[in-house]
Image 1 (tube, one colour):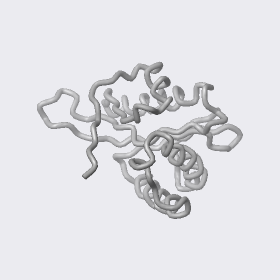
Image 2 (cartoon, helix red, strand yellow):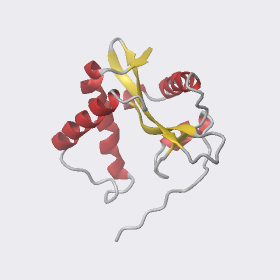
Image 3 (tube, one colour):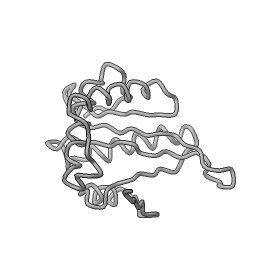
Length: 156
């Protein structure tokens, strides 16, 4: 397995594994995760990822096996109010390991590479939001993430 910083060349494969993850979210809450058509989502995701690939406050790492992308992590660098000692932190926007490559350490390898890159920028705090029904919660706990807050929603 090889891990590298994603470029525009990687977009098609990134969108493929992203859609695999995104389309599975309907199982958790169909109303909350309701999306547009697959083709429209893929086009919008391409535009979204392409824009952020060029943004210094976003980091995309991909994991590949034999030049096939099987995992990715997308982090956004954010700033907290100045009262906090840890002002800059990384929010995981997306993390995906294609189903046929799960449970092989790819997520942990992507996370370790991300942590190494963030340390170079003196960032040592990472956050993520995850659906309470997502089985990935177990993987997040195994690499040291703990529940700090709970996101609550209200439809109106």
